[in-house]
Length: 217
Image (cartoon, rainbow, N blue to C red):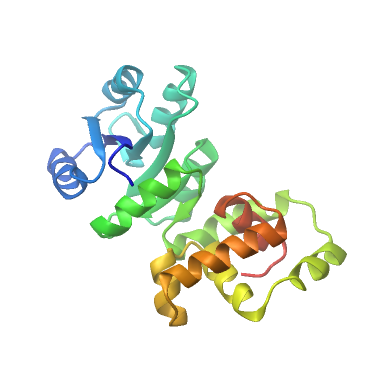
């Protein structure tokens, strides 16, 4: 259920904020919105939302400045999901390094956006599929590489679990993975649960890092 998730919208285009609120406002609890950095930080201090939908570029700065301001305000439990028209690698990597848990483009549909909000709230890392590669390339080199462990761990997974693992690690949703592999969403969920258990990982973010480090994507 997503109705209990509180969301704050940060975007300098008022009509866009209005449209997003209209599309998702019945499925999440939108507690506020802002079009400027200072107003956004003040609003976040006041409402302490679960998730912030955050544009990357705004007058006077952008998403990174909002995240920094929220961190300085002690809002460590708030998660940030970038929602931007930009799909440039520098924008994606920059806002993720600042602390965002995901990055999706404004071409995303309402259902997938609500799902992304839920996943970020639960601690997952969420990316539009073609953007995941930017993050994987940027962060893959920061993790240790142990080929003996790779083979041993991979041997635990079935062929189908490996297929599902690669799709999920690349940023595809459960629905997208199910469609691409011609299986049910419930089956995808079962495979993901098995993969995380076998690899002793806690969430999709750790799975993405694990797969990137092993050049499995």
